[in-house]
Length: 206
Image (cartoon, rainbow, N blue to C red):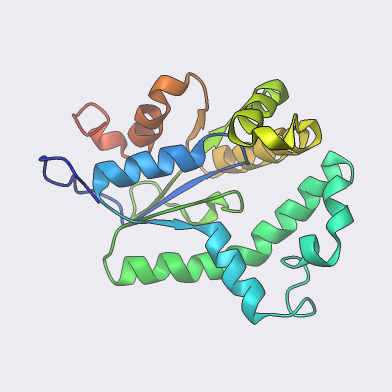
């Protein structure tokens, strides 16, 4: 994965969770850090798709909600956020299994996604986390428009993102997990990486 002449940088974690709401830049950060450390990225969306393929709605109703009740995505933002939180909690055992496997086999990985919770991270331990947050709905609208121009301005989705992001950020801070703001964009990866590896934040790793 590392195409430069520099040797891969060895992380002092085994699993790095990069969480945050949709449209905040966490995927870009995850990929940049993966290149720096020469480790793979696991996307929670892939875990979701795998579980959807092997379960029925009656087994995991929270996880299937967007397929069984597509109209739910257009409810009031507060209601949509409640559903997102329920999905994140339902996914926790599956994410725990992925995390435990990488810790047990000593194979570093970055796990990123909207539905990550900070609960698994331990300061100074093999599982770290950093959460990315953008608190301005107008900025999230702009981010979506840049990424998905054919969809037009997605104001409702942006409102949901900000509310869900606030919940995640509050939960992260309560757990002692660092939260970084999306802006300024130019040093987001540097800031996220420094928070994930505070002991190396002054080195040339980032």
